[in-house]
Length: 448
Image (cartoon, rainbow, N blue to C red):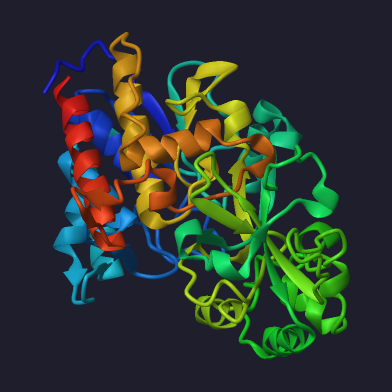
């Protein structure tokens, strides 16, 4: 461990998954930390304890194998001495191929480990002002307190801060049946002659549409929590709320077929579901206007009624919930630094990642970046073909108008080869190859 006597402490606001991981990474590199956490002196509506890294929703870190992108993220974190993964593995409970944990044991392990670290000073109480000097990490999470929220808004500008999150599902482009769909922009707008459009259209007959609407209305929905008393705005109304207002309402909204006559047959369909490219590679497709409060199981059941999506794989399912996050592509560089004040970094869900592990991973990156900065070095991001690099690229490079919180998924990584010699590779084989290449790339970055 390095001599820390002359080093100024890094301030971390928030001891959730991201803040806890960042504090650990800094301390392991000999950098002192002042870790601020308002709980239990001031609680959020979702938390029950004052422990670090308390899990407030599920107790699963999702798939733990290399054919799944979150499993790749797990392995990368383990190779970078992640505290969250150490404690997750120690608190593991049976869940098949997923990593599920005893949530109380997990957060108690994280808390005890951090409190045993002499370089980490715990500072209880709410932070109402961002420190004016020194290195600072804001990792306050989606339930950021009102006072800190106002500080962040003043720092970033109100137009770059979102308070509620309306998310439409994202589909693996390879899983769509292209024989039942067609590429076309409405009225062929902004499309050069001979080129396909930017939107993939899944057409419906009248009977298909009416059956779909009936299932939208009947599907099980997720109730808002007490702290999510959100009015519906026209721009983020759940698709099932539209359906409840009238059978034809979606058909005159996001599912309107006008201007989308089939490019080969000229047929105008009764209704159309549009998907647009959600990333530069075109491997992700966003269901336009399909934010929803249906349960995840119901989303899969109902949305696979759409022609062309019968075998769809969903990289992200829809939601409408409270989630404070900044518009990171406009504000942060590729190492999580605020462009106009590089001494301030952001990490965790507030940067626009979804999920426990993704939040912790960005805390891990922030900890490494801050450690470099504390030693007078320029922080160095991992390659974009790693899971961590892909998340950093999503945070810093996505078009601002398209930016939404995202889980790690293979659509954010470069696609793997489809052939091995003369043998066509299946999806699982290709994804394992992407993971193997990512781990090799990460090791090269770590060695370098």
